[in-house]
Length: 149
Image (cartoon, rainbow, N blue to C red; front, side, top):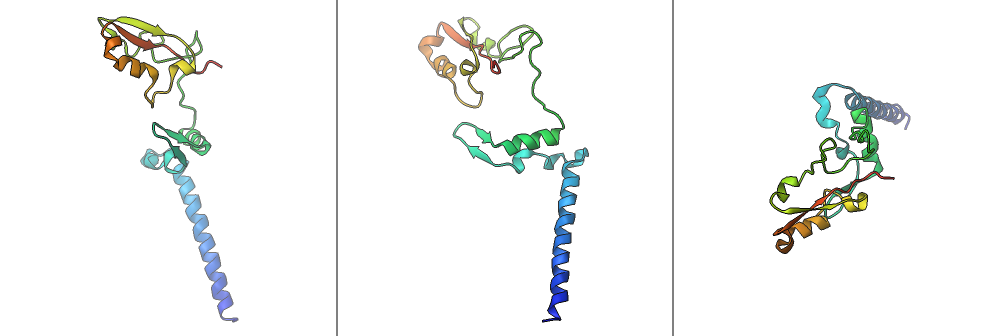
């Protein structure tokens, strides 16, 4: 039994030291600014998400790592005068889908984030604009904006 004790102690120290060195190496690769390791700095590789039929709903770990890896929030700046932005150009107010309404009378929808809907799923305006009875003469442009309150 006494012969095994030094070997067991050496094994435990070796495994612990290996794990510590591996952890420090991984952190050095993840949190440096070298562009060669950009492929490994993707938060979706390490965070859990709930799969929905229409979109990926990431847990809070994803957002924490996204901030840590990018160094700053890469969210779009709000409109300087209005404070919010939507699916339109903030300088000209031209809607992103305006070219679909050429030759038709545009129906403009204004509202908050409930009107805006989310872009990863099919919203009510997609169903309405798919209806040929409606789109023969009209086209709905959704000017809803998020981030109101």
